Figure 1 (cartoon, rainbow, N blue to C red):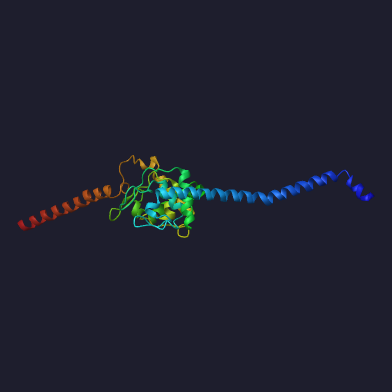
Figure 2: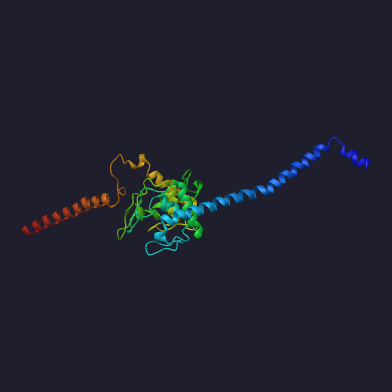
Length: 270
């Protein structure tokens, strides 16, 4: 007992007790704090889904069905993912004003918070492409030359090789990419809206998407798009190219016809 009492009165006893108390406090915090944080995030997600369902019921259910299963007026949204909602609603294409061959881009009627809530609800209906982060779609440090090669291979046949857009069949069209945000270009490649094919990461990796975005933004740069030397072929699609073919192609044919007629007439006189 005397030895134990002596140890308790040791000068370092208070320090040892303090260290043990700090260790216990740290251990308890590490054990319980992450659970509280995860629970808070789960609660916030649940609230976002709940609010998104309300917005969906008012603005989307009449065409896409009360459970997202689709109707004769609109396709199913089950499994389209939050990226599709962010693109369609963020660009104002949804809700659609009226049915037609293609839904045009228009002014957005929802706030960013409401779009996030709608996206959370639709994502809860089935797994799909997730809304990208800025690190995924930022063109900073991307390879513009490679982006140009990829764009001309995969996109130029519809959007024109400078991204000015072009006509498709049955009243459809490939919209211009001028003024489209990097986020929405990335989401369009992810989800394949309307007539566009989709390019998931398994088909086109994130880095290649970033390269394409860098190329498109370069082509939309005022210094590049201003064309101080005049209109360029491909810059305005079939208008300038058709005019070139009409003037020089048809002009050449007329000149050849006149030459043949003149020489034929000379041959007959001789």
